[in-house]
Length: 212
Image (cartoon, rainbow, N blue to C red; front, top):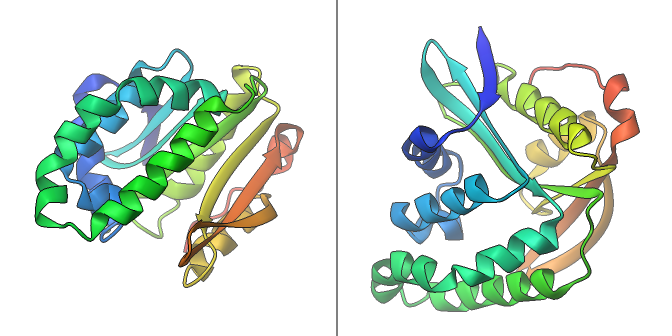
């Protein structure tokens, strides 16, 4: 049986491990475990975090991390850019090709932090399930619990982004859960993203389906 619960500081190492499994080759993973731990610590310490853990037989098998009022979170993240940069420094030194992607992500975070606050919006920033637990429904449980907690915080809508290309299973997963693709944008010149949103009055009508 899978237990969904709130994350705590003792979960951060397990969250990093699951993230590395779920997002192998992605930028945040390539920036190293110290960077990941610093980022998720920032989420956990945000005043309105939505940070959930999926646990089975005492082991962390997945997580969902996000926050209410995304511009406020990105403003907080910007305040911690120096410690985060230092955490990623050694990986950037040995992988100079990552600089372009990193600078693009920093520019996007700067833009988001300076945009107008949206207290009725929550962002599902990251969700991952360990490779040994995928396909058993933990991802669906995490998303549904995330939506419910966002609603408890007073959010009216949840937003997330995911890759548009070579990502059919993930896009189908969010569509099954009731998310609608509202727009597409280029995160980098080579990376097209889908932005999904869901109105939280739809949450009660969601059907619980296992992930594939």
